[in-house]
Each structure stands twice: as structure tokens, then as C-alpha cells.
Image (cartoon, rainbow over all chains, first blue to last red; front, side, top):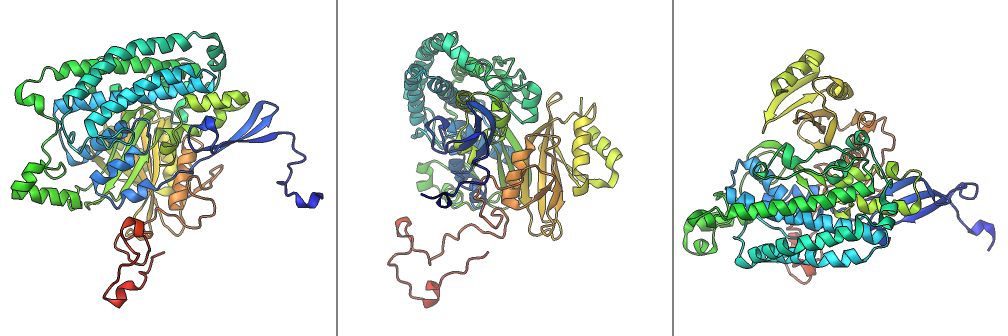
Length: 407
Length: 185
């Protein structure tokens, strides 16, 4: 083949660095995203990220949908912890509509949210293990994610994209099996997490791989808009559950773990500790649920006839319930006018919903503040001058979820 | 304690008429700044020893087709982490010259958020280091989140979409209905 038939990019013969595509479907990306690495030997000179492979235009779609139909869209943001996204969305709507949720609903929500946080963190941390060559921990904790998914299944009927809860509360009360499974989880998971930590935390090989990989200072992290465990790993104790408590988090007793250097090891430890804290929160919520007696112990939603579907038996027998049912399903209810920003502490950081309502039936504009999207842009700075193998570790320890990044 | 009234007072003292439409919605102070002043407002809020809005929570675009001459808006959400106060402000620009100064010099996080805003609304951030599309394909020649692109009409009948319950071998009595609906672009 003569030279004229080979079409190389300009300057590719003269240049001394190697270009390597990490992604879009590389096993280490755990999602569809591309990193174009410029390598000098095994050192990273620069990186460029390409995202948007699974962009689904949720913000546009949401402009044609009534509020309750947007919940399934939020499932698909961070699909490792969709109940958190769902709850955040419901709380945004409730804030806009001025709905006050009963205490019992808050506690039930906290149980679901913290379970979701645990399932997200345990996936992230065990994937860090997989990417550094330790597969055992991943398979071991996976059965407890399965148990969490079974709990979701008892509550709402689905596992991954849950569509859990409704505006004002839950679609139905938790059944006994759900509570039994939560108890089972609380009984069994601490021993498993302890063993997981024993396997990793002081493992020499694991520590050598993670310590010093992808560090970020608190100042840079804040400038990059880091939130959640990634920010806390660099030493900033910013947690929305404490700073602006929502959903009765102010009644719970827990601590925020922080790191110091913001490297992969700190991120790993922060996430591990957060799982312990989450378990303590779930335990406290379970205890608080026991204080409800009589009719209070059966409350699972607020009284919002405009948005909360009436009971089916009422729909068949009562005129008013039938009208509300029809109006809700057809999305024929006008929202109050207003602009609202509400954010919750999702597993990855501050998940925000910015909604502009012009008084119509659908949002005029809905914007998701997706923590993943925001901190992925720091990836270049985190990996500059690092080794190729660090690029993989940094990516998994940031917990990048393509669904959330691309919205 | 930093109150919304105090922030409003400080901004009005500093910028006069360049900041307007102060509102408090759901506890958050929001206002509108002129687009020439957006960086000055941002850096004043950032540098001031009392205000300290040093965390950019969010930046996004909005399209108001009815506001002739100021159709596009950029919305900034800032957060004072020490006093836990949030603030929101908008700058408006016309769709004909959608030029707004970039905030990347102040906040590294604004980089991708501005790229996203450019991608969907076509707002041209002057001085941005790498202003190109981020979520859509590079070849796209329109800005899809603008309101002139409606979502697909669920009632359209020109599309053969048998798997999803429309099109295929349905026959229509009215001949006019079978003509393809005009798609706005």
C-alpha cells in the first residue's frame, strides 16, 4: 500500500505522544463515555472527554409532561440509585405545590433513600475493587444489592428504574415482607460490610493503587462544583442532609465522614463510612416508625387530591374520586406559577431540580443539576501526569454514571 | 446572619439600575442583571467579604419566545456555603445576538455548564475556552431546546409507527387527514 492511501490525522507522524481511546464501550468506563488520552509512554499528558452517547433529551420531554409522568424520567438519571432521584423530584413538586408530608411518610422515604444510597455506594466501591484487580468483594456485596432491589420490589414492584413514591407520599404502604427484608438487611449487612472493609481498607496492594491517585484540593473541588462524597473526601463537610435538612433529616443523628487529600483512597473510605451512617439512619427510622399507633401507623401519603390518585374502590363508587382520577391521569391540572430550585443529597452529590412553571399543566422549563456531569469535567486535572492505570481507578472512584451525565 | 434584604441592598448600592426585578420565591432571592454586567455581578458576589457566594450550583438557559428582544436567559444559581444562603439571577439576551460573557474565569465548573447551554440554546459565551457542543452531535445545526421546536405531536398520522399503535394499515375517511402534517422547523 502506497503512502497516499493511508489517511492519518495531520501531524500524527511527527508527534511523540500516543493517542488512546478509553471508551466509549471500554469495560472500565462502566457506562458509555469516551476519554481520549494523550500518553507519553504510560504517563497521561492530557485527556479529553466526550459524553452524550445516551443523551435522551429529558429536559425537552419534560416540557410536555404533567408532573407525575416526569418521575420515570428521573429514574433514568442515576440508575444505580433511582429512588433518590424519584424522592428528590417528588419533594420538588411538593415544595412547588406547598404540600406538607406527614412524618411517617418522611421516615418511610428516608428508609428508601438511605437504602438507595447504600446500594449506590456499594456498587461504586466494589467497582473500584474490580478495576484495581480485586473481583471478590464485588461478587460478595452484590447479593446485598440484590436484597435492596428485593425491598424496592416489595414496595413498588420494580427493581432498577423504580418510579417509587408519588407526589405526597407513596402509592401504597410498605407491606410486612418489606419490613422483614429491611430488618434482614440491617441484621446481615454490617457483617458483610465489615468483611468487605477487612478485605480492602488495609490491603497493601489496594492502598498502593489508590493512595495519591487523582487527588484534588478542597479549593479546586469547590471551584469545580464537586458535591457529595467526592467533595467530602477532600475535606469539606458539606452535606445537604445537615446543611439544609429536608424530609425530617434534622431529627436523625449521624455524622458526615470527611477525608483529607481527596484522592481515590479517601473517596473509597468516605463512601464506606457513609454506608455505616446510612445503616444507622435506617435503624433510627425503623425505631421512629414504631412510635406511630392506631390510624397514624397507616398513613402513607398526604392529602393532595389534585395530584395523589384516589383509591381504586373510590374511583368505582364515588363521583368526585372518578373526576380526580381522570384529571390526574390526563394531566389536566394547572400548576401554580413559580420558579423553584430544590436539591437533595443524592448518592453522587447535590442533585438539583430547577423548575419554571408558567401556570400550565407541564413545566415551562425543567433543568436537572446532575452532580456527575459537573464533576466529570475535573477528570483532566485529576489525571494529568498520572499513569494510565490511574485513569481507570479515578474514573471508577468518581462514580461516573452515564445516565446522569447525559440526561 | 446574611439576609435577603441585606444582599438586595448591597447589590442595589453597587449596581444601581443594572440589577432589577428582585423577588423572593420559596425563600431564595432572585433578580435580573443586565447582560453586560453579569461578570461584574458574579465577581462582586464572589469577592465581597460578607456575601461570599463562592459556589456555583447551577447554570442553565431558558427560552422565552414571547419576550421580544430578550428571548434567551442564562440562569445562575450561586450558593454561599458558609452562611448557607442561595441566590439566583438571570441575564437576558436577544436571540439575534446571543452573546454573554463566560463565567469560566471565576468558576471552573461553568465550563461544561456553559457548553451545555450553548448546545441547547445557542447562547454564545464570549471568552469561553472550548465552546462546542457537548451532549448533541457536532454536526447539529440548530439548538433543540428552543421553544420553536415542539415535541412530536402524539396525534400525527403520517408516520408509520405500527409497533407503537399508529400508522400501518389504518384507513382514514377524510382524505385531508392522510396528508403529512407540516413539521415546524
